[in-house]
Structures are given as structure tokens and as C-alpha cells.
Image (cartoon, rainbow, N blue to C red; front, side):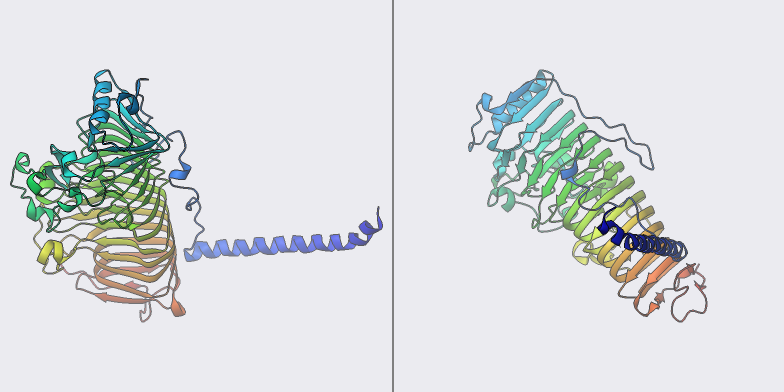
Length: 552
């Protein structure tokens, strides 16, 4: 043994004792923390992703089996015949409008039983193109498909739905009606109508659409084709309508004039690995699932000028007439970077949004993380909505319900009182579950405005780690549970109006002065309970319950 080893021997022994002691101390500390977490409600959130684990950059080749609170199809990648047509070989040239050539390739291949229409590397220009059954429109990695800004390149008008109301107008840049097994794939980029054209100047945006298009007018007479300088409704970037087996993968979308990806009345839709950038574009929604069912959205990255992932089901009387809900939708492993809402239900919800499962998603710098909005004259709402393993950074409001809207859009109906008579256009949100949610930073935890004749009903939040400036403001709620949570806010106020059956259970409140303040108003406010919380009841309360009975 060397002299150095002999000299180090006692030190190594002592260091071993010190190391062992530190391990024991750390273990005891962790055990104490775990015990404290169990009793106070705070818990370490396992399974919540961060932005390095989700989004288009992490798209796997295969589609994993879906495990949702409801039954979903076993989604598979579509299969197309091996035929491929390169648009160059049919005469398309870069820098020259190639609408007719691209459409001819699609039509020709479809009549042969299907295959792939290839948009090769380079800059290609086109007007509206319509997909046909068994066609895969594939964009090579350096392909850039630019859509015209002129109305004439989207004529004749086609059947579509704009903001939840059926019309005959420009449709979408990439459109399909009544087709089966269609796809848009590849690593290329699709650009919406160029700036400065008639598409953007002839748009009808002076009043809300339901005041411009009467639901009493037959759809065939709701024609807004832009002829002779007349009004049009903006084309979406990609919108199949009445289609089955729709597959969109890998592409990037830029410069849309309106909503980006909008399946309408579709069944069996897969959207994966898509990147959207519409920051700065009004009404530049990322994806709007409109009255469609059996939808999977995964590994997408959205940066939007409006809502990011959006669920809709028709607007007002016209939506009730069509009466097709959005149903059975899974959104997973997605990333929202900027936008009005990370995931939004509404505001067009006439036929209901139901059976939605959002999980393993991250929202960064969105105005709202999870958003619910509808209006009194728009009807519908949402039911059986599930959110799990969600993380939010630098969010405005982590959770928001807004069922009143603005007088600009709905007039006097935006006033909370008087309560209106319940009818077909009375919206309702109910049966909503949140689990394993981490909010690292936000302005608000919850900002909730329901309506007195239709309160928000049956919401459960379980296993939450929350860090916000402002806490909780709610009106017109019946049964709202927050349990197993650690909530850290710079404002200790819980403000309630006509809120009943509100339960905080096993919650640790980290608020200024360790003192919780509750401001309760409204004759229906009742049954507000703090159970096994820290602090155990709000400032000025003698017990942990607010015992006022609800008005009958």
C-alpha cells in the first residue's frame, strides 16, 4: 500500500461516515417532505412533460395505442397505391401558377384508384386545390407551396362552414368534400394566400356572421363568391368537409388568412407532427375540430394569432339545425407556444363538445392555458371533458370559463342579470376533470364566469401544483372540487358570486401571511368547505365551512 493510500485511509473512512450521514439526513428529509406532502396536499407531479418532450420535433414513426376515458378507434397509418405523379412531369414550373396542373394530377390519379401527388423541392404557386379519395398530397422536405391571394383563383364557390355557419364561399386552400382516405404529408411548407390580394380585401368582417347570414336563408342561397367585388368568407388553409379517414402529417403551415386546419363533419381524422405559425394573424387559429368525431391530434407544435387547439360544434340556430357534435377527440403530446388559448372549447358549441381527452401537453406563453367559452345565443357547451398531465409556463389565465362574452358580439345578453329563460340556445358546461396539472407561472389560477340560469356544474381538479399571481374568481358555479393540491399565489383572495358546493380538500395554500381571504356574495352561495387544508380555514371564519343555505 502506498504512503498516499495510508495517509488517505482515515480521511476516506471519515468521508464515508459523513457521506452515509448525509444520505440518512437526505432520506429523512425526503421522508418528512413526503409526509408533509401527504398531509398538506402538495405532491410531486410525475408524468407531467416539459417542452423538450412534446411537439413536432419528437414525432415517432408509429401511432401508439390510445388509452382514453372513452373508447377510441385503433388508428393506423393510411395506405395508398404505389403510383406517384410528380407535378413537374405534368408541366408545373416554379414561379408559375400551377392550379390546373396540380388538380389534373389529383383527378387523374384518383380515377386510377389513387396514389401520391408529389410536390417536389422548390417554390410552387397555386389557387385552391381539391383532394380526392385515395390521394396523398406529399410535399418534399424543401417544397414550398404558395397559395394565391386573388379571389378568382378560388372560384367557383364551394360548400363550407365559416365560424360555425354553413355558406357557399371560397372554402379552403386545400379543400375536399365527401372524400375518403385522403392525406397531406411530408416535411414541406404550405403558405396561405399572399398579402395584398383580393382574398384579404373582400372579406366580410364588419359584423358578426350570424347578423350577416340569416339562419332562415336556405344554404344554397348563402352564396358569397366574391364576384364583382362582393364579399367572401376567408378560406381556411386546410379544410376537408364530410370526409372520412383524413390524415395530415409532418407539414408546416405559414401565413394563413384564417383558421389553419379545420376538419368539418369528418370521421376518423389523424393530425400528427404538424407545425403552425400564425402569430400576429387575427383569427389565426391553429386547429379547429368542427363537428367531427374520432379525432387524434398528436405531437404538433402551434404558435398562433388566436386559439391553438380548438373544439367547435356550430353556431347558434344554424348549429342547432345541423346538430352534429364534436365527439371522441384525443389531443396528446402537443406543444402550444403563444396563442389566445392552449386548448379551447368554443365559442361555437351549439351541437355540444363531448368526450375530449387532452393529455401530456405543454402550453407556453398562451393568454389562457385551458379555455372554455360560449355565449347565450350560441347554445350547446361541453360535457365529459378530461385533461391530464398538463404543464403551463408564463400563462395569462391557467383556467378560464367565459360564458357571457362581450356586448360587441352579443349585445345585452352579455349582461349577467337578469337571468334568462332556459331554451335551446342556453349553453352549459359540465362534467370536467383535471388531473396532474402543473402551472409553473401564470397571472391567474382560475377566472370563471358562467351564467345564472346555467351554472358551471361538476368540475374536479385533482393533484395540482399551482404558482400564480392571482387566485380564484368565480360566479355561478354548482359543485367545484379542488383536492390534493399545492397552490402558491401572491394574492390570497377567493372571490365568489352565487357559488355553491365548492370544496377544497387536502390543499396547501401558500399565500401572503399564510392567511386566506374569501369574499362571498350572492343569495345562492352556500356549502363552501375547506377540508384538511393548510391553513384550515379562511381569515375571519370560526370553522372551515360556509353554512349559508342556497336560495330555493
